[in-house]
Amino acid sequence: MDAGTRPVMVITEIDDPTADLVIEELNERQVEVIRFDAADFPSSLSVSANLSESSGWDGLLRTPTRRAHLAGVRSLYYRRPTDFDFSHLELQDARFAASQARYGLGGILSSLPGCLYVNHPTAIADAEYKPAQLSVAASNGFSVLPTIITNTPDDAREFAAIHGRIVYKPLYVGAYDLAGRPASIWVREVTAEMLDDSVAGTMHLFQARCDKVADLRVTVIGDQVFCVRIDRGDRDLLDWRYDYDQLTYSAVEAPTGLAASLRRYLDRFGLVFGCFDFAITRDDRLDFLECNPNGQWGWLEDETGLRMTAALADLLAGGVR
Image 1 (cartoon, rainbow, N blue to C red):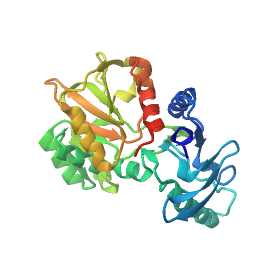
Image 2 (image 1 turned 30 degrees about the horizontal axis):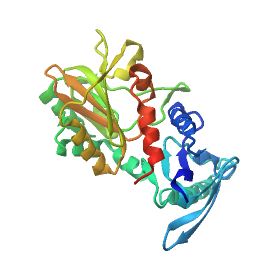
Image 3 (image 1 turned 90 degrees about the horizontal axis):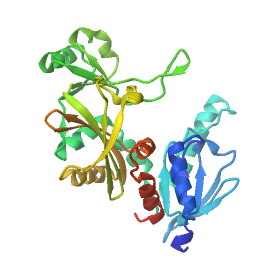
C-alpha cells in the first residue's frame, strides 16, 4: 500500500477536543483518518484479522463510514477510549465478553505491523505508575523531591517531622463523584497531625513541598519540545489546575540539556509523546513532578501560539516507528 494512502487511526471517546484538533489538521492535509471508540464495539465496529507469518496481522476494521486494512495503518493515536459496553448482557456474560474484546480486539490493535503508536497502550499503562515515573526521573538526573509512598501512619508522620512542609498527591486520579457530581482530588499540603490511622487504609504518596515560584509544562512530540512557563500571579496555588483564571502562560526556551534528558526518559518507557510538569524554584531549579503519557496540550497552544497540533499531525502523518 502506498504510504500516501495509509490511514491514521484515532481511538478515543466521542467528546475529545484534543483529538478533534489533530483530526482537523490531518483532514486539511488530506490524510485519511479512521476514528472510533472502544465502546463502539460490537454495535458499530467490527474486525476480522488473519495472521501472516511474513506481515503479521491483516484484515479489515469496519466502522459505519470507514474501513481500514490493519496491515496498512500508518499510525495509531491512542487517546481516551471509553470502556467496552456490554450492559445488555447479564453480569457474568458481560465480564466474559469484555475480557474477550480486550484481549482480542485490544490485542490486535496493539500488534499492528509497521504502525507508529502515539503512544502504545501498554507503554501508556506502564508510564502512568508514579513510583516508576519518579524512579526513572531520578535515574535520568532530574531533581526529584524527597518522597515516601506508604500505608504506615507512623512512617508518614516521621516523614512529615523530617521534612516539615509536605504535600499529599494521589497516585492515580480516576473517576470520583461527590453527591453525584464529578470531583477532583488536588495536591494539598498536610501536617503530621492530619496523618491519622486512616493512612493505613491504602497507599499514599507524600512529598516534601518545594518553594516554587512557577511551573513549567514541557510537551514532547516526537523530536519537538515545547516549553510553557505557567505563572499564577499573587496566589499561592499549590496545584495550578485548581484555578485556571489566575494563570498566565509564556513560551520559553528549553534549558540546556533538558531535551536530551526528556528523550532518555521517554525512551525508557517506549514513548514518543509526553507532557512533563516541573516546579520552578526560587533558585531556578527544576523539580520533576510527573509525566503524563497521554496529557492535554490544546489550551496551551491557544495561549501561546506554539504549533503543537501541527507537530502531532506531522508525527502521525509520518508514521515511522
